Image 1 (cartoon, rainbow, N blue to C red):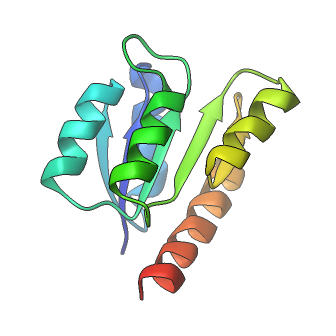
Image 2: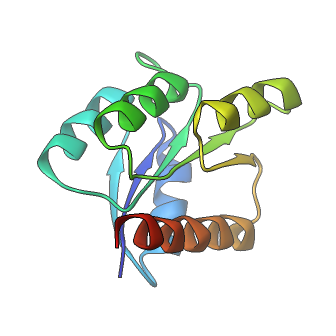
Length: 124
């Protein structure tokens, strides 16, 4: 069972994702990138699933900080932005995956499963 951190300023999306993921994983929530960073300091997470557009620090900034401080932690970006160039930039920065809203729950489950497997391969 993996520890997943879901970061989104939309309560409905956060709740939906955690409800989906708690079937197989432990799920924590944060409604800002700043709150997510505080949770990451206090606890190790296997995967971070984050929105891009949020008040305060963006999901892109969160990605950069997670990769700097917790390099073995896969970060899955979730966004309503369909800009392929933006998606490719985030992947090239080190995002594990880029999922578009509205997302299908099976796609999220599969991405998280691959990220958890990746985390275990990389970190043993």
